[in-house]
Image (cartoon, rainbow, N blue to C red):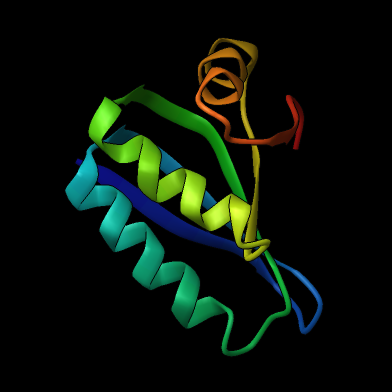
Length: 95
């Protein structure tokens, strides 16, 4: 189960706080949320500091978001290492 909370929204940048567990279903939900936010903002920052577990099935969805340039991620070190190992860029460990 995942919780997606809008933290900030502006024309140039929005931020979503992601908490809980990410599976492929939650990654698809996250993609829809990012798409909705991008109707009002140029880019989205995904704050993954509240994520406790990422199922391998969620990684392709996260990678697609970051590869397209639609989103950037911030994450704690333990998640940054996992994400980087799967080709998902993390912009930093602090929000």
